[in-house]
Length: 321
Ligand SMILES: NC(=O)c1ccc[n+]([C@@H]2O[C@H](COP(=O)([O-])OP(=O)(O)OC[C@H]3O[C@@H](n4cnc5c(N)ncnc54)[C@H](O)[C@@H]3O)[C@@H](O)[C@H]2O)c1
Image (tube, rainbow, N blue to C red; front, side, top):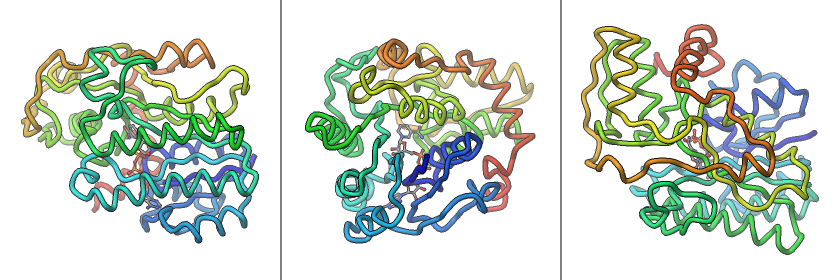
């Protein structure tokens, strides 16, 4: 299979690139970034295209040249940056997503996968959002992702392109602390490597869904491989059941790494606003099953990946930057 991964130099895109190469697929990565660290171990096996998805003519030309059979569309400006730079975010997350899907349709791509977010729910999603919960985002990033989910439905309903979506909870793993809102990975990485952590994104009552990076990448490929008559639209996707609270994660890390300390500088937010994330439709429709479904198992794997595969997770670059 020939797979084009937009945002393939980022956390999730690079993970899918690694897993796709391991499965024998041909992989092209499109990204606006220059830093190739996350794909350096597979650099010779990947076609790398430097481009901005908001530039429609270029995107169309790239797709016509590559003619991917599948597109994994992960390029995006993430939440905290979207709040600071809404125009940049609009160009990437709204116009760019439309450009990618339309280019895929025009060049005959079979399937496209879109990464959405828990941020599409906002407070209206309630304490335990499922795939039918109301979506009223409180942040611009959430509205942009909701537009992307709308495009997934629109292309599917008109039979134009087999689009599928994943509404990821917080992805965790070595160097997955690409923005401060993704606070769990930074805390874990610092507990293992440095013995202390300052959290810019969390307070002790902060809660997040928690999906280990390897599961997050595998889910993308499994959803694309699922039979068309079994899947529809965009799916909630989680790893650990329920949520992880920052104070509970801190306590678990202190037990593992005695002497570990955390200081918090994240925005205030109350315990109980978000208590779980229901991905049962993914489990039912395409047999989603996380491999890392307990905090202990995820922490074990995190430490193994960080210590044994630093290049695979771009840790060297991070430590020296
Ligand atoms: N990491 C998470 O916990 C999480 C949770 C929910 C959803 N998501 C979504 O998953 C996808 C991947 O997230 P990630 O954590 O890997 O983020 P990331 O920031 O690590 O990767 C995104 C990549 O997109 C690229 N990009 C941004 N604007 C671009 C543009 N205009 N043209 C081309 N490339 C551009 C960036 O350079 C970056 O490499 C995103 O769509 C994100 O919204 C991530």
